[in-house]
Image (cartoon, rainbow, N blue to C red):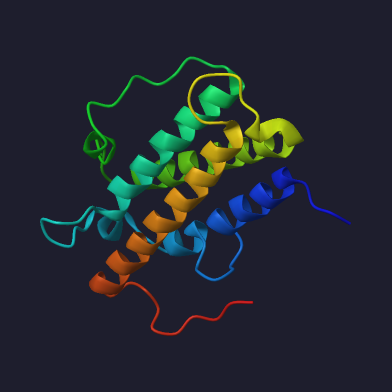
Length: 163
């Protein structure tokens, strides 16, 4: 049985957030992180976990709105401006993570509904399939950064078990 390209995208979408493959998924990278750890920065050259979560949420929400034909979020002043945190505390941190996961799940539903023509795009910009794959790679890149920040702060387990 041959897989559709949308099935492959969906499988990789799941690897990015929930399913361990070659690297930890984002949900594992965020598991057990509290607001203090999420706010910690590895010096001037790095972003906090919370800043990275907000950055990921911004781009996921933009793609979700685009694929659903909803109004776009206002353009960020720059890519760096998407790495912002405007709140503090455990409740705000938990809300940030919940929003990221909710938007990710909503995008999963959209990806699941994509047809084989997802790479044939008559509109401007990239085809939906290209944008989804780009976001999967984007998630993986930033998940690696989150794991590194956790290692630097000593909050990443020295030994992990996974299936």
